[in-house]
Image 1 (cartoon, rainbow, N blue to C red):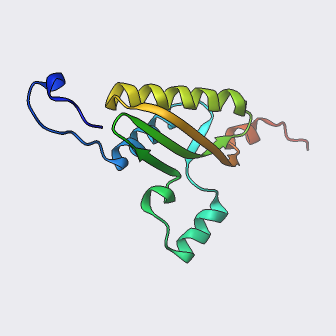
Image 2: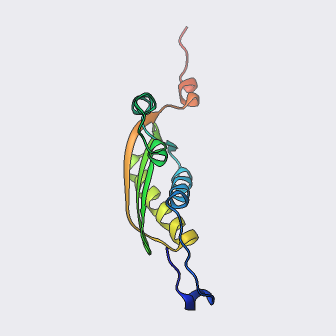
Image 3: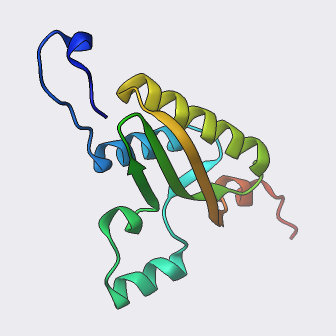
Length: 132
């Protein structure tokens, strides 16, 4: 993102790095109830570690393209079983767009989400009554 001289009063250029935008988007997504974590499914993660050649951001399930005023965000999410996925992804998109605007001034042109796994919480398993 580039700020104009009249906006800040002193000449110069401000560039917000892809890693910064990726971090903000990832943290915003994790704020949403039902998102367990970010990243690839365990099978893909193991394959990527063994085969190598995977970029740092991609390894964590986040990739971004940052322009001067807009950003495109791709997130891979691991979700918690029992949450409504369509509602959750709406909230993730809303939260990521809001945080990017608040912290960087960037407009989220696209927020692409891929659900890569479902995680089961230990507490839910323990709630079931045991039959003896």
